[in-house]
Structures are given as structure tokens and as C-alpha cells.
Length: 244
Image: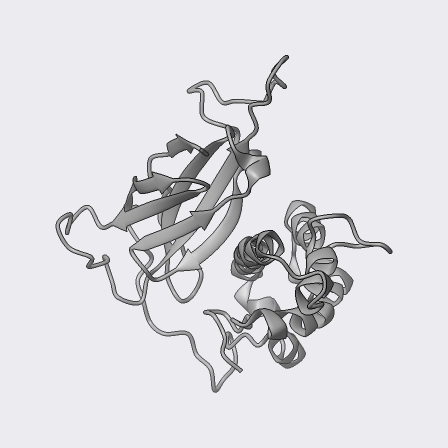
């Protein structure tokens, strides 16, 4: 089974069964694993609880993706975006679990290789600075992010090759008519609570897709380094762009 970093299946067809095991397991072991209510609620929101599941969640979109009569490009695009959001949400949860809390059953269910005698984490220093972030390209319903190391601004080289980029986004809708107020920090940037993880990637370019419903919204992005043990750098400066 092809996996992303952290044992999470890379293929959409394999991610569904994985979530069916992992989401209830994390909920049942929330206290022991020190999982925050906010992180667990976010993951369950992406997955989709209830029958029928809420529109736009994994349990709503995946059956449509598998049904040839219902499958469509918008559904496939939305599912691909949701897959990245779920991956980021899971990694945020896994990174917050104390290393001492992991047991063999946790590793078996999640596919994680951390804390065991035969799976020692790769030695790697905690990142001591943030990557730089910019909007490399933007077009119809997409943004492309560029993430570089400030010590190597003219190359793709990261601070260390084992580091990944954790990308978070706040998507603020700007409807026509009376605007809906959104909380902001003093600098005009969305509150920390509005930023959600959308990816952890080792690449220096990252493509973010949108749908018609997102057009005219403003997307705010930030990124940080994360090492194999889940230790992170400070956040980059926030950048933003309107979805067109």
C-alpha cells in the first residue's frame, strides 16, 4: 500500500477503509493520546458523521466517486482537496500525541512508525527558522504556492532534506450583498482558529484547487517546517490571494 509520510494511505481508494478504522479509534482513545477536542472535531467534520453524512464530507463524496453514474469532475476535484485536508488534520493530531503515549496497537491501527524499539525516529534537529512562502501562480480556481529556504532563496534546497512543509489555510468567503463578518487578529490576518491544515509536502511547489463555490473568497496561507519527529519551526509570514 502506497502511503504518505506518517502511514496515511496515498490512494483515495485505500484512504476510506483507513479512516473507517482510525477515526473511531482516535475518538475512543482521545484522552489517553491527549488529542484536543478541536483537532478531533475537525477530523470528524472532514470524515462526516451521521446517516446520511453531511454534504461535502468524505462519507458523502467517496461513494459518489465510486459510482460511475454519479462520478463527475467537480466531485473528483472536491474529494482530492478533501484528501489533502484530511491528511493534514491527521498529521497535526499525530504530531501532538506525546511520544510516550504511543503503544503497539496505536502504531498498528495508524500505520505510524514512532516510539517503538524497532522504529526509532530519524535523528533530526528541530527546525530553527521558517521557510519563505509566496504565491507563485494563480489562475481559474487554483493557487500555486512556492516554499523556499531563506538561506537558499535561488534554489529548491530545504534547510534539511528530511524536513517537510506543513501548509495551513484560512478560506474567508466574501459573499455579495451584506458581508458576513469574520474574526480577524489585530493585523487584519484571520484568527489562528480559522487556519486548517491542508497538506504536509516535501515539494517546494504546492497546487491548491478550488471550486465555483469558492470564487471571490480570499485564501490566506502560512507554512512551517516539520521534522520526522513532528517538531516544527515558527510559521512563515502569511500570504493571501483571491480565488478567481
